Image 1 (tube, rainbow, N blue to C red):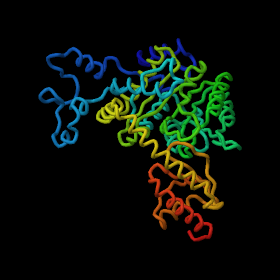
Image 2 (spheres, rainbow, N blue to C red):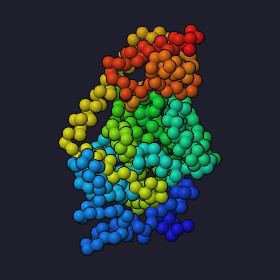
Image 3 (cartoon, rainbow, N blue to C red):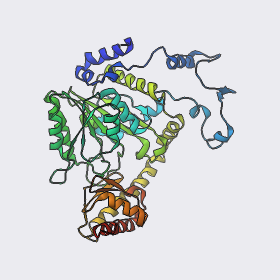
Image 4 (tube, one colour):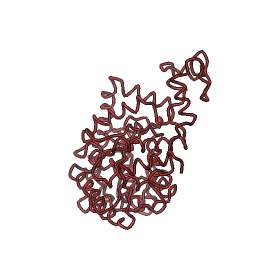
Length: 433
């Protein structure tokens, strides 16, 4: 094992032995080179005041070389802020500004030890890093039975972990914290579990209430007290889109420092929060450990980035940083939030109107981009009917669930959308599909 990796592992073992045990084989082996091209280039950037011949970019007239046909569309930005490589951990100022934003929006994080967020190539990449650091073949990854399908590719197919499901809702249509607790405690023999908490949930658009949040945290604490090491990951892809009475912040804060067998990891990003899906800017943050251990995990994270994508795109990081620092940012974001909330409320009004009879029920939703219908007929058949006869695209999940993204439908069009879904369901019931 490389001495640098060994040193990072020794730091974690000394300060947080259970967190050290959570690392995968790759997580133990990875490190960030100290004498590699990046570190030598960084040193030269500070001291080489005559010629800097270290890094593979081209310069001209003291600026990064560029084509005018590209720069003319980006004239508001200095070439140094878009053409050069970003550091593998991301632009330092962006990382600091994002952490400040996190602290404002998540008061429960205040006073907790917190790493500087590392920039990822959006949230999928952040989750992939979590999988690389902590998931080995046969490890348990605990998710509700209604979850984002990419979890299986990321943790099961790529890393060989076992997906363990529990029912998302209980009999009262609340979050099934008892099911989560049972799934966790069932990992006693393994001694380790990775828990993915995605609120608002994709696909059903549900965020637990405050008491449900306490129950989730209690379930994780119970598992830790039973001797199970828990990597508790909050996948906060749709953070902030809370339209009703629910948790208004991430459970990351409550999980931070919860128990010496619990590691809190937050994966979030500008992608959906700031409506910049194609910019691919995400973040991964650790909490609840000593400063030395947080640094060790940060270096391992950046080591994985260096070994895979080298660094994230510089232009989009610059764009996001500029937006976050703007005095117009909050007002514009609130405007878009209200549009999204109006669409969610309109959907609920339509579904509760009695107009659609008993051909479906819907799963509780109060946040995010989506909601799910539970149909009385085959969902895939309805999906095909909607596409071929009504010009409507939806997502079929399993035999009966149909996911509808109200986020991309204008509010005045929502009634027509659900009228068409209703007609397609009736067609299928009548055998006309």
